[in-house]
Length: 133
Image 1 (cartoon, rainbow, N blue to C red):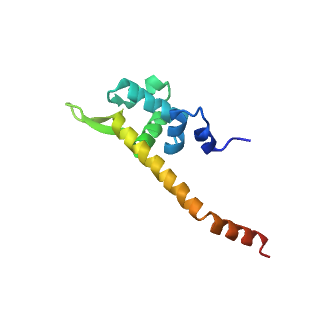
Image 2: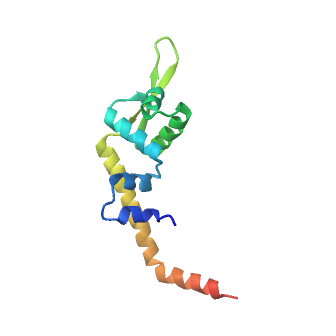
Image 3: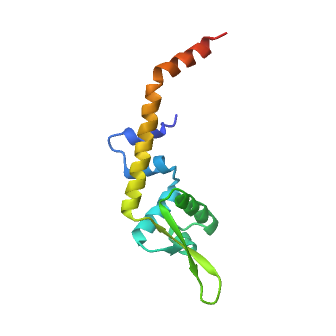
């Protein structure tokens, strides 16, 4: 039986990778791309990211869009002198990433606190509906 996602975070030897996977709902590829962008510390094109991750561009594009939506990756549009444009992607700075992660941890804590406040009432409702004929 697979373990519950929260179990990965509550183990004594939990890693920051597990925190990111849980808080941001990241796939292994999403996480790899994020770490590539952090390590490179410069904006990268989709092609460069695809090459570094050894994955096709459409797969990388979907992952990068997810990272942008999560607020931990920045998408910039660059103009080509001859006309047209292209996009480059980079990880947000470490302070922004840390602040976003702290906010998500606080939101998770608030949600858990709210659930615990309603625990007895919700349990009584669940038990009543289970035995209700």
